[in-house]
Length: 150
Image (cartoon, rainbow, N blue to C red; front, side, top):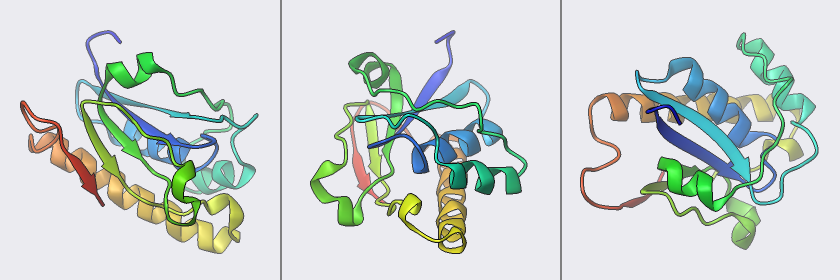
């Protein structure tokens, strides 16, 4: 990991929400930090609407490939963020990182482009908030594990 601290964004298929969160984090990452995303059942490719929505933001994720969540990725992560939730219920992954947040974002792949755009903007807001909290030294908390519902 070349000395960088890792944020791991996770959803089931790693084709929409987690890819967007990874891209935003890496575009705004604090020094010494980077993000990666993964899923428990990776899709064959990133969702075309995710690609289109991120191109609107000037970020190209068209060459990204969904990845499998592995124990090594979990162990390497300082922060794990589970971005799925809501109607998916029990299918959301459980992440064993040092610090975990659950954002409960519905799957934009099942939405109109306009509705998905609103969730893209919400993901961006939450990622920028996470970046700010890291910069202030608020997360990950020193010496203790914590799980938050966001």
